[in-house]
Length: 490
Image (cartoon, rainbow, N blue to C red; front, side):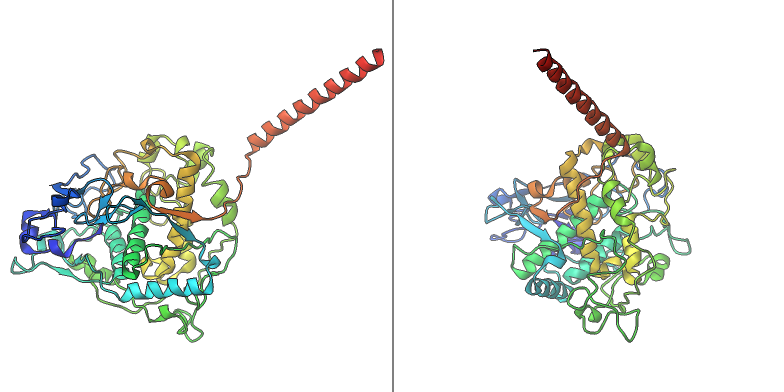
């Protein structure tokens, strides 16, 4: 299950029927084994799309293909049984492998700086290979649903795209503006993957998509995406070296060093003006990659904040509200936040969308500046992968440490795309936020090798400990004195 759409489904016939249930083994001809039904792997069923209300900051219901995803394109898809997965039920769910998908699989995501020289080279070469390898299964739409069959109503508007650019495109598609028509300003206060509670679940699946695509590309099921621990109190990018993500060019500080393989990378999805005014979508056209200078934002204050605030589930509600409720680098402490508070919040505590809010996750992008600092372009910079794997690592630690309850994830009235049961845009077959709100080692087949700092005690906890210690000391003195008096009496 990855994203926009399998090649088998982008025919005029399939688009008109709204059915995307490809054959797994069509031995007797087309349509004879939809979803691997002949072997019990899955069945072709109706799509379930969330119909619960979203919050009011999106007032254009009926104008965006991403609403009730993916029903503007398809209303029937494969529902896979057991541990089977994929657009035709031909693969296994994350965490499972083998021909019958009955073998547990667990990969380890490690700190990129802890990799050996050979491992670093393998990772960088794999990224570059993904940038230049056409995705073997999926293609991207280049027009909206009402124009998807082309001017002659019989020519589907889809393109091939590379594995890595596909990763970029899915992110772009989730954040793009809502086109309201020629001559009208596109609506910008909408985001299906940021500024709401689905930020973490969406990006978790986004990374899982890339990791599994690269495993298949490399024919290496043990391949895993490393992470970058940027919460170190430093004001330098310690992975911006030519053996990793590329240093700055000495000739042009807005570009990557020519000694890095990434200096040859070019970006996709840069033509925002065309997308917003003409109603077109990003396609596979390349532009010039520019990764800017490191910004002036310093990271020196981050270490105290990122762990003590965002992993401490005991933080007060007032403190939580002061740093906003959604789209932070690390998962909110849901135990202390009511569902009403979550629902009401979007970037701004009043519920108003505010892209200027600078969460810690945002600061990391801004620190990198250049391509990495622009939401619609940010995955073009491969540092995006390492930044978000660390974000996911903290999310997973929070889920594990506090045994997080999915009931705290809002069922309705979250920003559009962020309700608990919403199918995350534009992943395919449909996958909900709920399915990613789970601990990774037990459910998704990967684990992070990371040493978390110990939690600092709050002032109230310190006072409590001091009082208890004092009472124990007094008790010990009393017992000792009693024994001494008793001995003297005897």
